[in-house]
Image 1 (cartoon, helix red, strand yellow):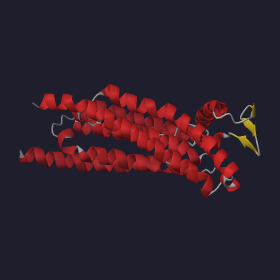
Image 2 (cartoon, rainbow, N blue to C red):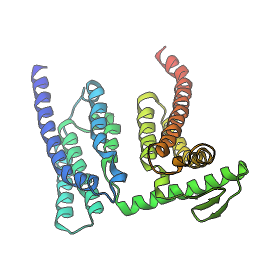
Image 3 (tube, helix red, strand yellow):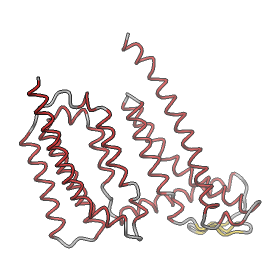
Image 4 (cartoon, one colour):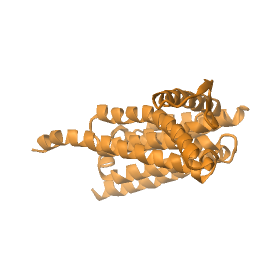
Length: 293
């Protein structure tokens, strides 16, 4: 038993060294996208993702690593594949956001190979969520992100149009521009609320993992978050118009007053998601009780 415990400690030390190398490999590409003013908006969540994954692994470390069976060859192959991808991305002149995607992905593959090689497939399966969650740290290429944000903003335009119609606010819409009494609104990419949208999806993933057992309920929680993001954006735009029209025109300008409406809407959405989570968890509770009895 002592020999096994000593061996496991050595494996963990080696794993920490591999983790440090993986961080080193990912550091430069992550820094490049975070300091690029053209695209940094899309990737502000990246630095916190590894800490969350590490916490999730540490939280369940006793159950995850209770039974290890090193898979040296598959793990080595995965790590070598990660290093190969890293070399490929460095040797070829690739646009910054695309190269960052490949480089960070290669670092994660390198790290996952060390995980598999040192601990085996069972600990990998038991810690699969934290490992897969780490993929959120991979910066999706900026051209793809531009399309995603435009899609969200475009959907928000239709929600906004529907709300103005229901509320009987007279308007003329030309594309993403609304001609309204006293104001002209342009629903640009910044109206997609990308940071809050991504935060909501990440929180939904984490909440489902931590509090729900059924996969269908976890999927439902995330699935509900997606249309809520679009509805939230539409309601926020309409609310900004009403506040600016009846109270203070400064709410239409960028700044704290403008952002405060977004914070308020995000808080309301979080309350709704919290209620949905509570309902799903309560629905699972009788099954948990019967399983324990």
